[in-house]
Image (tube, rainbow, N blue to C red; front, side, top):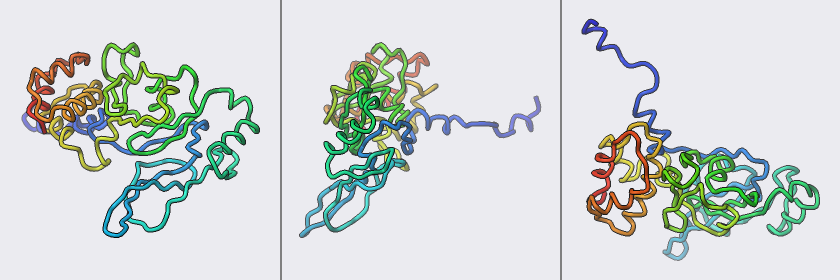
Length: 261
């Protein structure tokens, strides 16, 4: 093979572009379920300044969530609207919306229960089945595909998310039992444009290969760094002991976490 041929640019998807699907670079969410009830609303996080102090509030409008929350400066009081996702009727409270939904669609109302999840800082009201797992809810109803499913038996660690700050396996958690919980997925680590320091360390150190296990590792590492900002390599290996990596790239991974970021 000639030297000129060796210099030809690689065709197709570059490795760094491929890493986006591993959660190193994240984007928005796609809603794919008619049972998504958030009152079927769009939620944006807003910062309001009153008498020199700053507070974060939630404002709800619209009918469908299609992008991550954005930060804007507003004045006044946020208004929450509860809108039926199918017929578009508006109701004064969530209970009123539930009653209307059950009356008009009795078969749909039997399909599951309503839960409130705060995912990556956004409030969602969802209808879920009795045996629906959190991994399914995040991926199939909220479009957060950064949370991977590997063994689906709680043995590989790839589906790890933070629930109220604790790293847990989403494939083993019943969504119906998590109402009111604060959940963070790999998409919540970044603002969608700039990597957070931990993600940047992974990127700079090439601490991935296929990248499938990376989202779960990032979430476990996030919990570790919150509890111990300057972990040793032994601390990191213990924290990641439940995460399987068949690419055998754990040395770079441990070095990206040890000592803090």
